[in-house]
Image (cartoon, rainbow, N blue to C red; front, side):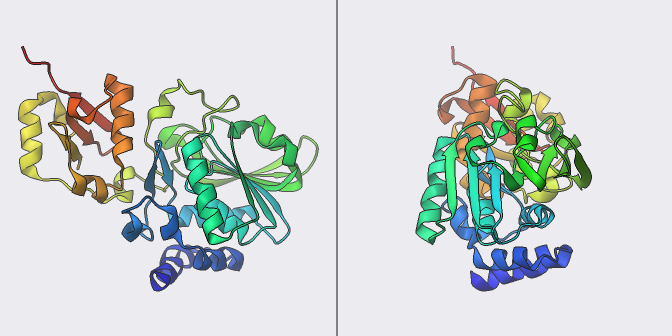
Amino acid sequence: MTRIRERMVEHQVSGRGIRDQNVTRAMRLVPREKFVAPGFEEFAYEDAPLSIGEGQTISQPFIVALMLEKADLDAGDKVLEVGTGSGYASALMSRIAGHVYSIERHERLALQAKERFEKLGYDNIDVRVGDGSKGWAEAAPFDAIIVSASAPEVPTALKEQLTLGGRLIIPVGRSEAQRLKRLTRTGASAFEKEDLGGVRFVPLIGEGAWTATHPMYTATAPSSPGTFASALTLFTTDIGLSYVKRWWPRAAHIIDGVPTVLVTDGVYDERALKGARLQKEDVMQAARSQEGIESVTEIKFAILEVSGNISIIKKQKSG
């Protein structure tokens, strides 16, 4: 994997303008394949985000590199990451900064990240489960804060926990209107602001961001520039789509693009899931949200739309 990792840095990171040698060195050191779901190792170095379960993703390598470069990390810095996820970004930060504090709202992901750090010997990272929009007041102030989920606006608590001269990197906005922002604290209540471009991230859920009942909570949003379709390689067949159209005529609006059938008659298409870099839990999360379904056997079709959302068609009850 070392050779593949080197190619990733050369083509996806340095080749796109990332010049911070601390960032490129860290990306050469940290084994990204250790931070993806089992069975997805072969996709670890592709130019795309990957599902890690719980409706979350490990971000596209370039986006991670861009956020780290814009955070301007240095040895001795104390850094906060909001949204631990797989732990990959925190691992990279730990190879650059002095200490990393990382908050994750999903306990399972937090525990998995801790285990990865321990196995790799990354002992300068603290992880806890909590509301990332509130930051980590006990450890503040921070030289840099990196938020790996999108908020409707920059949470006040995070701005307050920056040291003077500290940098905050955060995606702001909903769905396709998200912008990656950099705030630099220049005074008690003064911040320099910079727009770094359009991105798509999963939503930041918390008191200072989106609430758990907000529609964005169930939306699938990969962290990469441009459309979702450009980030994923989708697998499907004309025969399968024709069958779906015959069974469910309203599916025509979904099939206008290049969708993927993930479940047919209660059976997962393992190849399609793997090709779309999704896990079964992603399908079931959509099924529970849309139809109150708790078992895949209740699903007639699960279709990954070109928008990135998963549409669920429930089986009709016989009789």
